[in-house]
Structure formats: structure tokens, C-alpha cells
Figure 1 (tube, helix red, strand yellow):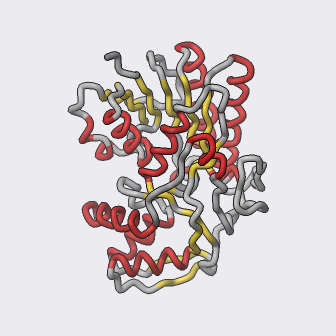
Figure 2 (figure 1 turned 45 degrees about the horizontal axis):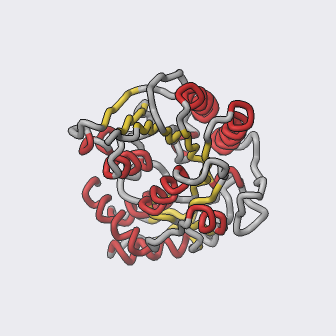
Length: 312
């Protein structure tokens, strides 16, 4: 049987490494492309002995040529600490990376999926967020290199589809957590777990009443692969997230409870442009992908805490 050849950009990252693993389990030939700015070799070292897995050190801002049937375009730092470290490079990764991968998809007639983000909604004035909402984004704020980069990437994907008939798919990913998150990525779940395991103060920015929806990594991978397999006419965008909404304070209290930590909660001022609420409307994903998240917060947190115990 001929194996499907799948290219995953950002394949050594948190999400990418889980996707590579799952694609190998689904009997695909997997090409993992990463420049290791935020990706880590330890995320995919257990895959290196698989003859159908190939690791390529490359930056998507430069063109890359390969024969592939499907492309998952995940390359881009996704946590504020990392994407604000070099905002111009972040924007280049989203824009030039998309142009290069769309060009490749056009040449080799591959189907290509863009990992977009709930950040395209900015600090939303609509709650929960549907795919038809255009967002409330500051184009010159501290987060705009990421938010606007991903918005530009969506635009490019739709235009390549209209102009060049490239078979594209767009998913908007909401807050995701799980094993292989970077311990220092500044995201709320990893921050809280690391602080709790070290019995340090848990830092909440703002009053802790802002809300987020947290999905476990396995649910996201299932959603992305389901989207890749939808009918050609359906390009998205489609929200992939867990609609169960929690305040940041509730998350902190749950992490303290599950780790048995002695940590105290302290409060600091809220960073600029930080969204006050975030919750996906997933009606479209249910209808088109027959998908909804299955793993609830406590179950996922226990698995993630076990992972962090092994690395810190």
C-alpha cells in the first residue's frame, strides 16, 4: 500500500510533535520541518528511529521543495514570550511561511491546512466567538505580530484557493494544553503547573475573572485531522476548541488542588491587549467535522501535571 506523504511545518513543536506521532500511527510517511526556535528535538526524539519519519531543519521563511500529498502549516511561535521576542520574524513566519507552503502545495497539488488561531478574534466583542465574527484586534499592539500575522495567513490561504484552486483548509485553534508544552512558554496552564510543582507563588495577571476555554492536545489533533479529511468545497475557517469556560482563578485553584501544592495565589497587573474572554462556538465543527472535544479539564490537567513532573 502506498503511504500518504505528509509534511508538518513546526513539527518539533508542542502541537506538531503530537501530530507527527499520530500521522505515523495512521500509516503515513511524515516529514517534520522545524527551525528549532521554539520546537525541541526531545519532542520527536522517540520518532527518529521510525523509517517513515524524516526530520528536516529548515526555516519556512525560505522556500522548501518536497513531494507531499498533504501539508500541515503549523510553523510559528505561539506563546507571547516567544512571539514577542522577535516580532518581525514572527510576522515573517506567518506571511512568508504561508506563501512558501502555498506555493509548494500549488506546485505538487497537495492539500494544505493552516493552523490559525482564536487570536484572530482579538479582545472579542462577541461571546462566544463564531467563525463569522471579524474580531477586535489592535494592529499595532504588543500581540499584533502574531494576531495580524495569522489574519494575513488566512487571507493568503483563501486567495490561493480562489486564484489558483489550491485545496486549502483553515482551523482556528483555541487555548490548548498537554504534555510537551514548553515549561517557559509563559502560557497560563504551563505557568501555573510549573509554579505549583515548585511550590512558588502562582501569578494571576488581572483579577483572575477573565475566562479561557482549554482543550487537551489529543482533541485538537483529532479536530485538525478531521478537517483535513473534509470535502474539498469546505475550506473553513472552523473553530477547534473546548467550549467549557473557566476563569483563570478557577484554573489556578484546580492546579493547586491536583498538584497538592502549597503555592499561594498572587495578583499582578494585566498585560496590554490581553483578551478578557475567549470561548469558541463549535457548532460548525460539530456539523462539518462531526467533532467535539472529549477530554475535560481535570483529566487533561492530571496528564499534563504528570508530564511536567518528569521534566522539571
